[in-house]
Length: 94
Image (cartoon, rainbow, N blue to C red):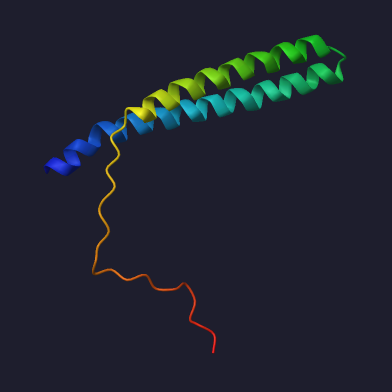
């Protein structure tokens, strides 16, 4: 494996872990929203608010962790290729 691919490996692993956590959070939120809706239908508004408040806390914690992880990622933006010209997506009218 060359040096550039080797340096991408830890970032790919970290992003994979982040996406897995996001998927788990999505499933949790989907389940919790269904439970909260059922609680409201049953007249248990306090229970529904508790579920949603817990989800809000979990979302904020996920956001904080994710932003911190992303701040530590080195950003490698390749310089533009001077020989590359942009081509319009559609031909000019006329």
